[in-house]
Image 1 (cartoon, rainbow, N blue to C red):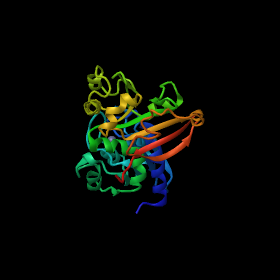
Image 2: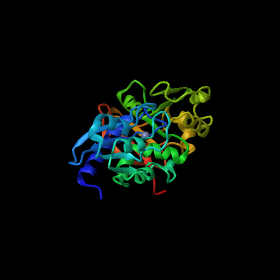
Image 3: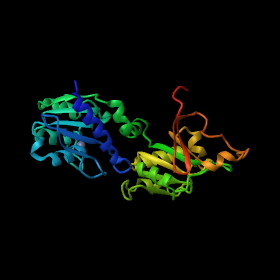
Image 4: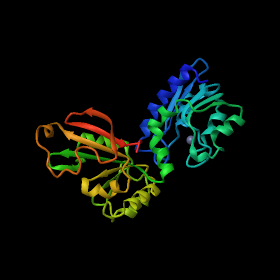
Amino acid sequence: MASAAEVAAMRRAIALSAVGLGATSPNPPVGCVLLDPRARIVGEGYHERKGEAHAEAQALAAAGPLSAGATAVVTLEPCNHAGRTPPCRQALIDAGVKRAVIAVIDPTSRGEGGVVVLRQAGVDVETGVLTAEAQTVLGGWLAGLKNRRPVITWPYLITSHGVEALPEDTSEARLLHLNADAVLRADGTVREAVPGTHGSGILTIKDQPLGTSAAEAAMALYDGGVRHLLLDGGHDAVGPFLASGLVDHAVAYMPYGSASRRPASGLAWPLLPPGFVVASVVKTESFVRVDGERDASR
Ligand SMILES: [Zn+2]
């Protein structure tokens, strides 16, 4: 069983992993904390950007010789394949790590992943530690693998005029962009959160108006490496994505002032699209922000 110190370290690793959101796709955002035999943190790291060192490699580099005999606490099963960087499971073995505590098993490893090789090398491996909590960061990447399309978030303004696009120059929009890989605009152009991250695949939809083929646009972006997509548009532009069931998160921003006026009678819906339920509500500087999730009970 994972010790209290290992569980606590996993929560830190989960928080570290979030630094990679919006920058690691198509790779997963992963965090890693190394504990010495007295349960002190001797190194930690996260996968910051596609093509750069993985979380485990960062943590091993930080710990240096203190990696020998350490426990690696990592949010995702260490990778087993040599790609742009050497496989992490081998780096852990070579560094003399004795135990590995893992939250989420990599669904692409097909039972032949890092865990098997680590165990063969004599490393004590425990899996399934804080899996649900780790999925607060890894959930988007896992959903993308399952659905073969990006997770799609649609932020919008609810005003007395109707449902409008959230202006890109607001702090609310910038916060959402930080956590996403790309923004698909109403005119069909795509803005990457990290320019050049997703190769040329996304160029294929640049001349398509958003929504002429919502599913094709989503798949083209997935093939280009996008795992979390923001839609930038009002109700009309985003309609085809909604109708196709492709919107996963609806984020409504209601300006304070709008509550004191009578809403326009032409509103498609008062707050969230049909099929969405309130997941959380927070007050920001200028808005009430409502995060809507798909109603899982339907
Ligand atoms: Zn790796």
